[in-house]
Amino acid sequence: MFRNVLERLQIKWKSYRHRFVPWIALNISKNEKTLRQVKERSEDKLVPDEEVSRSLRQLFGVLYSHGVHHRVAKKGHFHGQVTSDNELCAHDAMFQSFGFCIDRKPSTLPFAGTGVFVTKGVVPKGATVAMYPGTVYQVYEPILLQSIKNPFVFRCLDGVLVDGNDKGISKMVFKSCSGRDRLGPFVMSDTSWLTVNPQNPLAVGQYVNNCSNECPANVCYQEYDVPDAFPVELRQYLPNVNYSPHSQRPLRCVVVISLRDLTAGEELFSNYYTIVH
Image: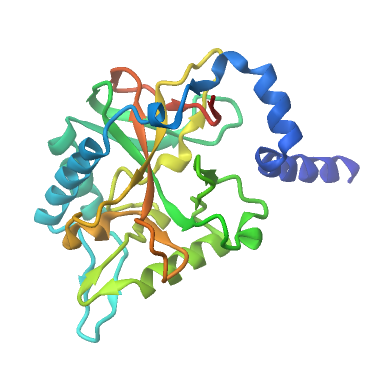
């Protein structure tokens, strides 16, 4: 019985430790070789936002033309569940657009659970290889309840938080906010990343595992604000939504950029910590 208690405490600690500042500071000093460091915020972007927009519009345009999208029912309710046929179309569209595919599979790291792998083709250096989905919280918005036992909260450089948890209260919050934000017949965000078959095949970035000395980082996170000119009909593939309906800031997304060429079979590893000097 005592062993079971210790195991439960260990599981809780693993989910909490990434928000415990002393633990973070200690592990930063221990794993200095694996840290990603940049001199200033402008250098944190490896790829211009315009290039990220071009890549997303290219993929989303192919998805839209293939009919991989939400369907509007007669009574005005949209159906967000993606079928297995749509999953095949989504990955075909990804390969057609980028020349590679990614997917979730059991990680090569012991006890890491799920990871993200290149499953087909070659990823060139500087490519937008994945997206970090979730509800976007500004620094002044409450996230205490959602953050409990939640290892998927991503903190941006300016303090904006992205909750990439696809279960529990986080899942309910995202679906509620997504159902709230519509423009006529157009859906403004994608809820299918909450299922096993996301219609946007990029929306698996929350499952990219942290790098180590043995498995160095081959991708990195990059913040991206969706421009106002982004086509309305393609916003249904964005796996992010603002928590507040009155947010005046552009929608914050986080994309995953390749640091080198990647081939089929490789697992994606990122730096969970970026230090800006």
